[in-house]
Length: 147
Length: 147
Length: 81
Length: 81
Image (cartoon, rainbow over all chains, first blue to last red; front, side, top):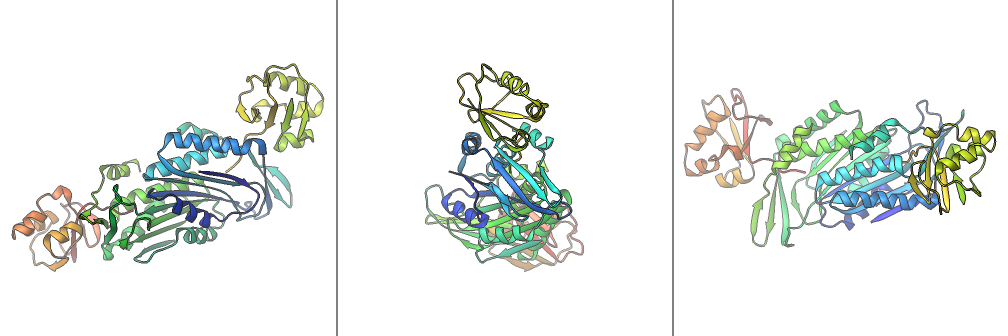
């Protein structure tokens, strides 16, 4: 069990290996890694991620607890960065371990859906032309309805 | 694009990092790692994975092509080992990269479902008490119906 | 009561947090009070459907009570992940 | 025609592959021929629902044609992943 909110980079591969080694007996490990995308026209200077420090850890732990209540998970990992990110930087990752592959997959999707719309992070894209807050997507809000 | 069938171990973390670095612009990377589980009573000596060499690569490439036809994927990785595996050894992994997290997740689940029941691998559990071929599960066959 | 603002709400107000004395008992009442202050506040709170709020770091609807709360937060829909 | 066997089919027959001369035109006809050979074959092919087959490395149903095929494979349901 680990929820980490940090400004520093992390290495998804190393994290996955440590997570898998720690989940002995699980059989199935699913990971999701979110990577900063450049703007369509390649103009992204950086992405700025703001968060609500007093709430973030608590919100992520609640999302993890909700996932554990629904699926038989041996372990869960959530890492989310804030601050300045460049194109190709890894923003966040989740990992789930279970005896059952379907549980590991579903729980990872659930974590991602809730993390997208219920964890207090806001992204701002900064290009040479200016800065814009990334708009939330209706489809992200609707994605919660499947759970 | 890569399908690898091999006896040698692989490192899921390294593979994930290389895959993510190669999928610039994807935004969403999903991985699944399958790990050898011990027997319920801890008696597993080893797992023996047999395959059908003339067919395996072809079958996996077909499964990959089917996934690419259904989802907008920037890249796909499938690694599957054969031969002798011990408890905690990594048997196989798949990874998918897409601009869309739902596509990356669904494609990875699709690959796993087909790999379970349509790729020519057979597992035999060897314990002190003897050796048994792992029986296929009805639920694995039924899992194909959702696609 | 501490009131905190994030993302473009913070930018529109030019303010990350402030202490507010209020007799409001719900978030909606607090919003009405704040929006009535001046043009900046009126603009920031002009479209409630574009806002989300948390009371004591817990996401809530706008009709939620703030009686006894220590901190109320206003921000746009979240875009993590 | 080459006929290849895997997993417990191979073990029951004590044989990984063999060359078969046949006039069978479908997998089902080939199975009938093989099962008629002796007890070992009869046992290995006693429950077709527990078997899968491939013709020239392509999974097929048992009513598939084997005319012109180079290799037919018999094995239990697959358990990869």
